[in-house]
Image (cartoon, rainbow, N blue to C red; front, side, top):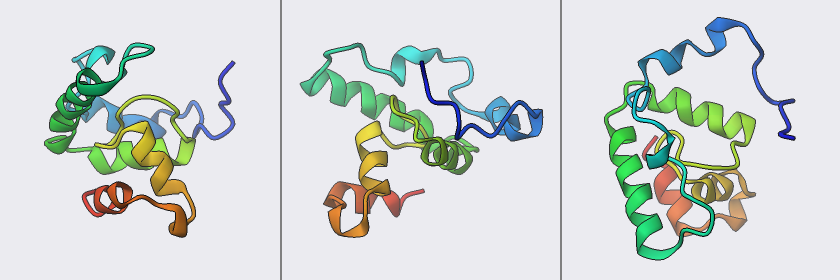
Length: 105
């Protein structure tokens, strides 16, 4: 079962940003990779998702949500799960990719 303790709650105002998301009607296939997907296929999927995020009017809210709730999977706010994990790591443990991505919120 998922840990929902960090979710903001059922109040609609917490979720309004999702109604304006560029990914709203695209389905999850572009943003969540199948189990075991690696290499070029995964990189291509992530890059396609990030192109959608790049023009999204609620990218910052999406990324904030993903960081607050520690979303464990998928591309949220233009960052992959690995990039978000690196961003949340103590500053001395961040990879170069996470520092670069963090500057592009």
